[in-house]
Image (tube, rainbow, N blue to C red; front, top):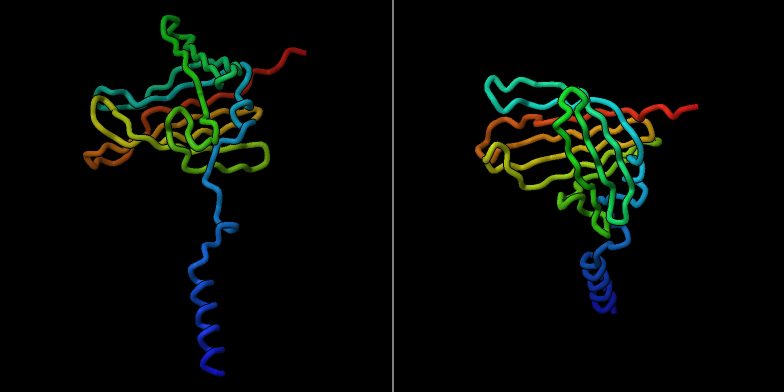
Length: 173
């Protein structure tokens, strides 16, 4: 009888050890439906970028942003007041499940108070060289920041390629 009880107990332990704890598994990070909506509206700020020419110094220029919600995502229209002929129109589009943002893999999403930080990674090129890019998006009702870090596949030290820092324009009374 002890042998049978011992075998049953051993079998139960083996079964428990092989059962995945699916209900305890953490959900992969994902952009939430309201995250990008925080961007809608008018913003003012700056772009700081690393010059491609040696000595690769940082350059900072004023920038404005208009963000509009469309069916497929958020349309971003960037303008640079000191360089009227320079502008950029792009989209921020999260996949249906939120695991990618503009084909970049969402690595983390954290929320603290009314601020959301999303970090993405992707294969990229920088100045024609293969690299890994990491973009950090910080969104809140008053602040929007987007910073792109580049790690060249050649093994050089990672560097900041560009960083946008915006505050929301005040609403007229």
